[in-house]
Image (cartoon, rainbow, N blue to C red; front, side, top):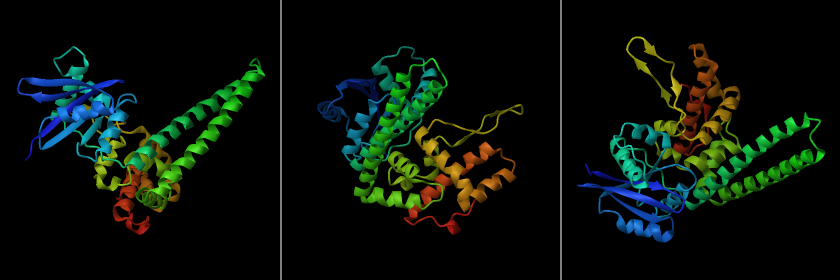
Amino acid sequence: MTPITWIGIDIAKADFVAAQRTPEGFDTQAFPMTSQGFEAFRDWLPEAEDLRVVFEATGPYWLRLAAWLDEIGGSLPYACINPRQLRDFAKASPERSKTDPIDAALLAHFAETFPPELEEPKSLSTQRLRALWRHHLELQNLLDRTRDRQEKASADPRLPAEVAEGLETLLACLRSELANVEQQARKIVHQDANLRQAHRLLLSIPGVGPKTALTLIAEYGPRLHQAPPKQLTRSAGLEPILFESGPSVRTRPHISKQGNWRLRRALYMAALVGVRFNPVLKTFYQRKLQQGLAKKSALVAAMRKLLHLVYGVLKHQQPFDPEYGSPT
């Protein structure tokens, strides 16, 4: 088996520090977060048959590195891990200092110890759709908060009328921008054959609406069926977690919530609709309730089942067929 060489990268706003293992420990080097810096980083890399990169998804700065790695066509596979995983790993390390080179080396050591799942290289269209649709979700969150603020303001007779007018103007701007972003997202999907096909197939599943379908293909990509279903479940933070120790310490299973919250939210809303109108999910959900699961736990199980249905229609490139989606 070919040995895997992991390169840990600690990312900041203007630069990043890379670490590679050597016989003496770790060799680290800083590079500017520019096209020239990325090329210098590639020249610095060691010669290895299976070379991989690992970094944290902290702040927005990692997106630029990920975009470059996607642009070079998967020639340098990479993993993007949850910062919580590295923090927990660091607690077991004897190293108490915290610097960028130490963090980069810690990332490489983490990947050597617990090899993370690799990201699927994304096309330019998928990258653009993901960035645009994440912007849409942020706008939607802002709209929801502004609505709440407007409702509270309307109940306060002391608030000047100008404040209420300003909130209404802000809401109108947000609604207009949301509609504009949705139109741009639909345009990207329409112009890309893979995205268009994936979107069409996802819409064939009862419970999956246009926005849920856009979220799924923006976050997973149109080829999400190339990953095992268990990996998809983990990436959405829906895998069940058990905690047992001896005969007395035993907790109820719960989901990890360490995955992509955008996926989890989209699957939750789709499952709420699906357990009512999707014959497969409805039967599955009712069976879980009959088995004694609480409604919340049964709904989470339905979210995982829905993810398997999504995997199925994309793997077989066929619209949803309830005859082939029998509950398990």
